[in-house]
Amino acid sequence: MPEVLKAPLVVEFPFTRSLGPVQSAFLTGLRERVVLGVRASDGRVLVPPVEYDPVTAEEIRDLVEVAPTGTVTTWAWNHAPRRGQPLTTPFAWALVRLDGADTALLHALDAPGPDAVHTGMRVRIRWAEERTGAITDIACFEPHDGEPPQLTGATGEFEDPVTGIVAAARLDYTYSPGRAQTAYINALGGRRTVGERCPSCRKVYVPPRGACPTCGVATDEQVEVGPRGTVTTFCIVNIKAKNLDIEVPYVYAHIALDGAGLALHGRIGGIPYDEVRMGLRVEPVWTEGARYPDHYRPTGEPDADYDTYRELL
Image (cartoon, rainbow, N blue to C red; front, side, top):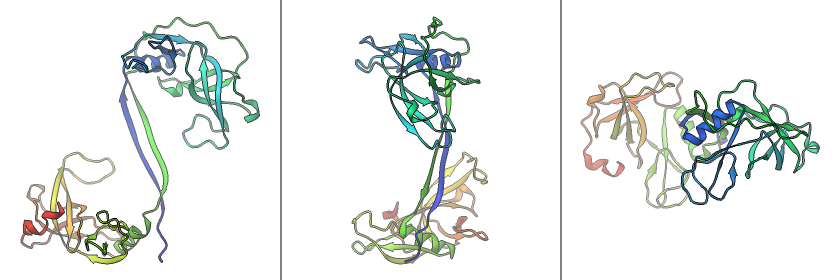
């Protein structure tokens, strides 16, 4: 059996969100070295603050300042920090109940080793040197034996409040397409398209999935399809993607390759975007060294009859 492919994959994007009045005050407070919680209907002070009461579900805005000192309620040692974590040396993830709060805040605790950390230990916030109005304005917690400092009297009213944040979402993992799609990818390297036929319903799935999604049975009979096919449906793209060197507008379509029982995605080229239509007959266009078609272009054949592809819409 051929070796199953695998490769590192990174999914990354900036996640932008606006802030309500409570979260805005909390993050702006961190920028000013102030920690704010919110008082719930049962009298508890919640840190980090929430915008809706966990008991009544009503909106709450009663902001309360709490101290930058607190007590560790539980913790776990991180022997090998990863990219993007608060510290580059081993540290503890700790839940810290700040003085004046009734709930705990999760953050990093800088300590020389796990033997130096214990539930009930006293800690304080170590503020970041540069603060922008984000949870990272708390660089970490550190051990502290002194008394809580005097509160500032902040009420949540600040100049130039933070109204939105951008968080970089990223996922690093190793992806393996599995046996069926490994064969599909290897065939594309030879400018061939192969699917797998279901032994029950006899549909040919491209790309293959290793099992029939309709019948639920394993598939292993390889079937070469195409290379020509039919546009079953399509959309016109008018927004340019940052990582694609393609001028807009362009057409992205579902294409049912000849012999396939499932339509796949492909870009349509070699024809004005407003002349693309359902039933258009197309063929792949390869570029030198590519492992998949760059786009599909019209073959010049008459359009396919609707009844030949209606089940593939």
